[in-house]
Image (cartoon, rainbow, N blue to C red; front, side, top):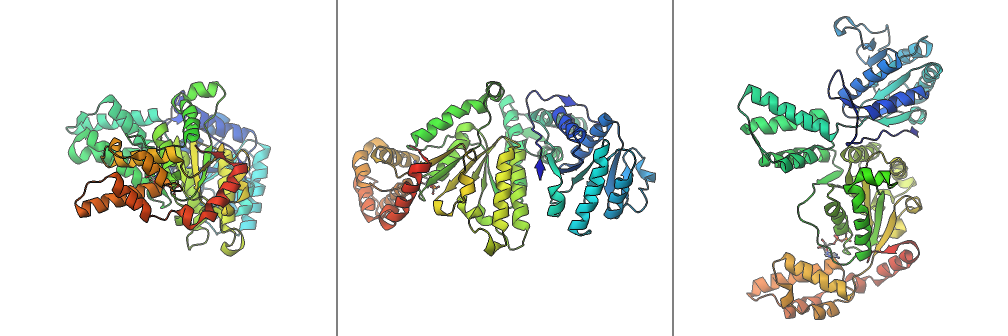
Length: 523
Ligand code: ADP
């Protein structure tokens, strides 16, 4: 499928007044207009905000000076400017084949919006040839068909000849205006007390990013009318509602930006890499002018427990971006085709929520099973993922983690996919000392009261997770026996632990050998 991108930019976006719904950003309008003028006559619009798309199409049709038709199952093709009560629709066009034949024979150019085209009514190859004929006619003049519908599954023959474009969601300023309007409306009708600082408003707006105007309006109105107050407690209500919407599809988990920074020992090279790119996030416009673009993502390799997940969380906390976690073990689903659709939906959600960090945990599990045994589903999902990475619609930074390089598809490792591949090795003595300090302090113990050098010396070959486990087990033991936690108790737990580097040295060896040529040490 051909692809076109419509980037949404909050700052500097020039708003076009809309007749219905929220105003649209001019660049989305330009993008659609340009596609049609350049004879892309079959467009797949990705949106879950149909109202917004309808407004956009109305503007596009006006600018191109052509009529707009909406197709529906009940009425077929109806001209948008006909009063709805007596709009009859073109005779017989409720049948998609007839509608397409009508378009193929129409003399004048027009914009046709198909919403809710039922899957499977026309056989794939026939539908594709009808679409092709209609598209060929339209490409001689000015006009296009735009197909939408959430979860729309078009036959691959049709997808192949189509161009996809996405409709950006509302900008921050639009949501700010919406918030103002809801407050005014509710205050006019009943008593509403507003107690939010300017900073609270910004946090509220952050949580609303990625939602449609309708979703944001519902959440805000509900939060306000429940107790007649808009205050800090509503921030949590909004956050929970947002989490519900993002997690509804079952593939993504949402972690908002936390106030506290993630404390991570070692990985200095990785931290430095992240620090250097932070300014792109804080000064995006300046950075872009300077010729820098939003970073793509990282692949982190290392044995289980080496702190890769912690590093993913650290990116989010350091860059002050929310984190979306995609867990591939939820991906494969017994319904054929569902997995692929769910995956595409998850990617579209990530685009909508941008700027965001997308953490794909154990990425090898998403694509590993390969060709035959799953009917090629994992291969197709990998294809979608690579395509999505290439397009980069929104500012989505990927942090992929992997324990097992032998199961990673080589396509994923090709240059340009990720900005960098980091290998997180077992911590050296200095880092082990730091890890002890982090985990003792996290449990309100004074780290200076412990012999950290001895502990570090005794834990050669331990991973960060194993060191944390030593601290936790020693705490349990101290609590049960009524003792205080001290170095001796910790050393006893160290003695009782058999780290992975002892039980499965070959796993670490294999990773190190692989990483030597292809990855950068994280610390
Ligand atoms: P992985 O994702 O590599 O399997 P995790 O990030 O889940 O490992 O590590 C498990 C836990 O071990 C973390 O939650 C953290 O508490 C601890 N840990 C691992 N590495 C470090 C580190 N470098 N600094 C601090 N804690 C660490």
